[in-house]
Image 1 (tube, rainbow, N blue to C red):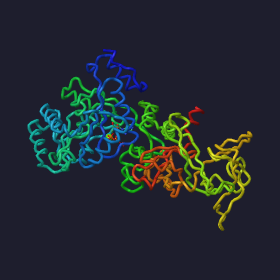
Image 2 (cartoon, helix red, strand yellow; image 1 turned 90 degrees about the vertical axis):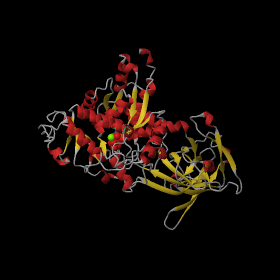
Image 3 (cartoon, rainbow, N blue to C red; image 1 turned 90 degrees about the horizontal axis):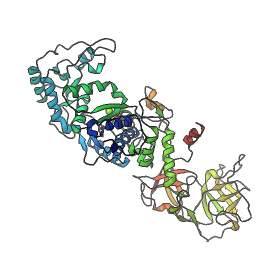
Length: 562
Ligand code: ATP
Ligand code: MG
């Protein structure tokens, strides 16, 4: 029995330690079953990725099963659009649930039957108090609650009323079904919690079949038990609910039954990770949609150019623990850079173009230079880039009066044009406002390929694109959506929105090899960062790129120091 533990792919954490101990002890016959239970009321975000990696990773490493279960018990907020996006995003991350895709709504009949059982056992009752009265009578952390005047109804009366609730005889809010536990319980969750409420709402799967819906605390544990889940892993805010989880399943006699374990949710700097907040950003137009590349949603990260490998790597590195903490978003970016460095082809792109004329280069001559696609990956081969008399260079790579240690182009200064030639700046033109319109230089034919034969060294290497061959593109530069580390610390997190989170550059000049870029293709634009052809807007002839990450890695520095 103990041999079923294969070498896990992910590091051990306290949840995995529990799973391993349970397997060794032969609990659940050595079976491991987890689940990822999103409510379809929004798109998945990077926090959900942590939960997905944990749950599906455990199933993968311990011969188990992980199911995808939609916790669709609140019809007013849930939509089919969300069901579809959740599946797409979870699959993109690598989650494989096989045939195990479930909906809590598929169990409505069985959950209802469990409620009737509790009533028959004298463990649940219909309460006619209003929501407000129930709240008032619940007591506080220091004072016990007050029993409802309807608490001592007989099972017969409760059953009759509950069936009539189901039949639609009563108004919303006029009655609820409550568990009969203990109004003086130390854990407030246990003070006769509601199990069912009346809600005359259309459900995206069950239509109008129901006008009463089970509460999360009742539906969740029963769904776990019905599916045969062994380890029900959730975030810490459900810690107090565990007692109720256990009470429902034990009172109804499920044996064996699932056990709930809680871990700390992911918090990220410069980010909000709550669907309630993310939906505001979408609905109020602060972003272009759930998949805006600035969003921490899986679909946003995907469109930004993040890879599933990088996101999974991040989830592994942050680990799983019980103490609340906040992860520096620089770590996520670090994981992305590390992954893209291995796989992204290098290209030259000029984002803010300035014309460079090579005065002594023959007018009609074109040379093709072979350039390495990826120095990190020999198999990536080379591509050719055409060179001619008129080039585009980055506006930033020229200074009329260079500051100290400026090794790029300036009057009289020599630099290397990456993979082509050494050039020396001979002059420039400016318009009336003083803006430089053109830079002139001469090239040294003896430096073909970008290397001098006389051992002469240059300190600067800049990228370039042949003007006659350049393809144009729009490039979108992104910064964090928020200007502070913890936007949620404030009453209104939106006061910290970064007004400069998007900069759109039109008329960028790219080397012609980029003409073939297709939506989703990722590149390193040399010296600038990683860029991904936009999945929605990039088309042949109308290229659009998103900056996925800059090259500057603040995390690598933090790691070195520490
Ligand atoms: P939000 O707080 O964003 O509204 P939620 O908890 O309401 O999220 P659910 O759809 O209920 O969203 O979440 C599905 C699963 O993902 C739950 O098991 C939940 O604990 C987990 N989860 C949600 N947010 C995080 C997070 N930030 N870190 C880790 N796990 C999370
Ligand atoms: Mg939730």
